[in-house]
Amino acid sequence: MKRQLNKNKKNLFKKIFIKICRLLGYEIIDQNNLYLPSSEKFFNEELNVPGKKSINLPLGEIKILNPVKSLDVIIKTCTSVNLVSQSKERIFEEKKSEYTFRSINSLIKSINLAKKNMKNISFKIHLIDHNSKLEDLEVIKKKLVKSNIKYNIINLNTSDFINKIKPINQNNENVSKNMFSTMSSIYKSILVAKENCDDLIYFVEDDYLHQKEAISEMIFTYERISSQFNKDLIICPTDYPFLYNKIDNTHIFLGSKRHWRTTQETLLTFMISRKLIEKHWEFLIKMCEFEHSPFEKPLHEIYENELCLSPIPSLAMHCTNINSVFGLSPNYDWKKNWEENVD
Image (cartoon, rainbow, N blue to C red; front, top):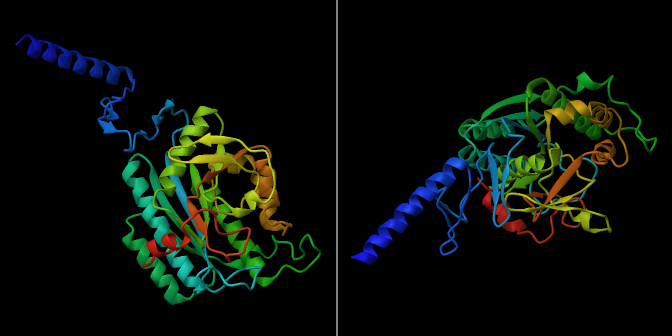
């Protein structure tokens, strides 16, 4: 009987202690079964509280100082052009429309998972299309209607940018018709971000296949690391192969469920805040108005002064030619990601 009384006292003390920890905002863990009684979750469940705290065992908790309120995803689509500056076939050698469809499928899955995890964040898709077939646009529109995500579709008018984009590039060559369209699309996407978006903006090209957890991991990591260092940052979803072609100094950070490395080079799929767009507006517009070599040179100049991170392992697959240094992430199951996002 005495043992039973002692056990009841211990259980009562434990309950009181857990309540006190919960009230004070402390997190504790039972080493026996890896259960966190304050959160009523096991260690392998989602422990982060969006906008409030980031928890990563065994390092503990970081208070969120820079909570995300909204994410606008701006997708640039064109199903009529395979690769702007190359004639090579993409991995799996499908029509361009198939990459666009699967890219949108992957984004919808990833955004909807993020919506489930982050109920206080608003999500919207802005789709900027140039010259896609009408039947392809209908397929895309049906996907967006079924997605339960707010969206709008913008048909790009390249004539709006004739007097804004220089006709001769850095190599003293004429800017090609396809490149002019691409630059117009990028220009439009940046204008849409400035005119319509309030917080985080994710610029996406239509040949990136995302893992389901990609958007959640990017937002959780943004909140964690920007709060940890009290500094805004830029996030790329892809672990590009060109990052391993030379010896560069880098720093490794711990995100939500990924390691992240600093980088000073990305392509045009990246997440950035409205604040940084306003801060570096001249560089972003310079990238749209003049074809540099490399094209992303003004973007890389921004990275010289801002923190830009890419994940290890990758959160998205860039569907280019298998031999391209700008494409397929190393140590990544390309076929699995491709098959997961088929209609």
